[in-house]
Length: 66
Image 1: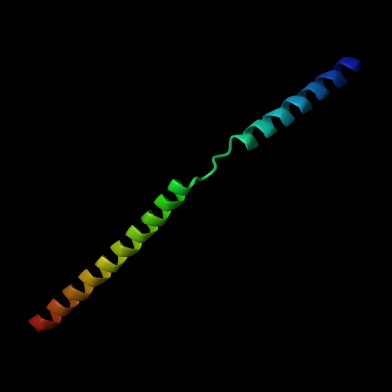
Image 2 (image 1 turned 135 degrees about the horizontal axis):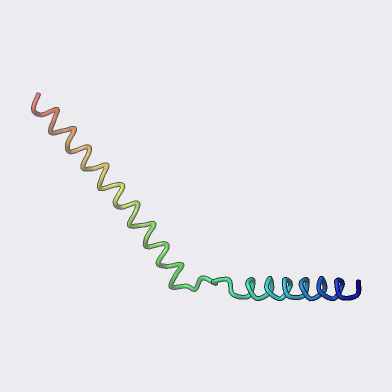
């Protein structure tokens, strides 16, 4: 019985240490990564606007042909 309790205790300690080590390794975003994400968002928005403008031009061209 003593051996079983010792094994459980060791497993609990090992899992606690693993949890602490994983939490300590979480990636922290720096200012460059945050800026990169903002640039990505801006590029996505610009791409959407260009796509909308292209659709509007195509619609205008179709109307002009009628």
